[in-house]
Image (tube, rainbow, N blue to C red; front, side, top):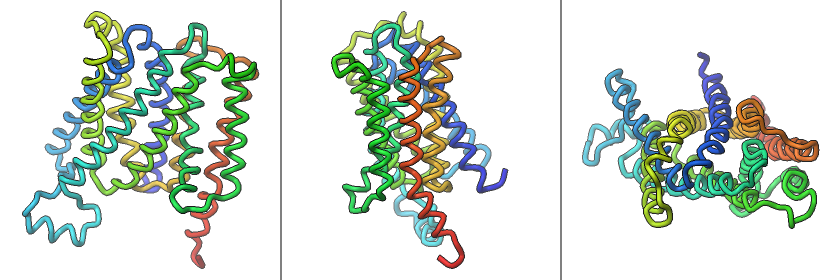
Length: 323
């Protein structure tokens, strides 16, 4: 596989796995509550990655952190920009895991709260995709002057959200819409935080973040929910899919791909999860969006693409020989 193609291919697979995960989350919401579901899926994902790390050790492809006091490792790290320490791994994993915990809870709580008959997978998938617009807007608060197209994207996104969520007024807006939108802000923060730790081994970082999210979910599950083993077993297939495919594989692919892929290309590819969420809801759960909701989805997706255009242009200019 050509090096330049590896990142985009991994991100496309990530988008497919994340999109189909909305189907699993919608199905599991019928049996288990949010903290129980997230604790289960995160534990499955962490166990899966633990096995992957063990396999990588046997094949010699593992990238363990430098050990404190290892002079040889410190010397090597001077010439190896990809080197990282245990402290970076733990701090990065815990911070990413805490953000992931908050965002994934809000998303699952939103999915769980939708009334029966709602096209939950497609609807929540497109609202979640707004995290790409939020990433662009966050630049406003970090000293980066946003391109005018970012504001255009924001306006288009607001219109799309209106058509998707409140075409008949705020009285008909679902609580789930609000929760999923707030979760989109959380996932935007997650992307930004991950970008600070792209030098850390992706598999190990993903494993630590899943363990952190699982631990926080277990504590909240014990305090706020009353899980039943029989119901967890009933939701076993969605939990296994979300744990292995969405958490174990997709989040790891995201971290690995962000190390080598242009941020704009990465954002656009990851936003395709909304399309696969709607497609999965239609194929697996027989969900159907109304024409107005479909128009809203189209505008939200257009906003996501528009928000990436300024960075795309800037990156293209920087790659020119005379730049």
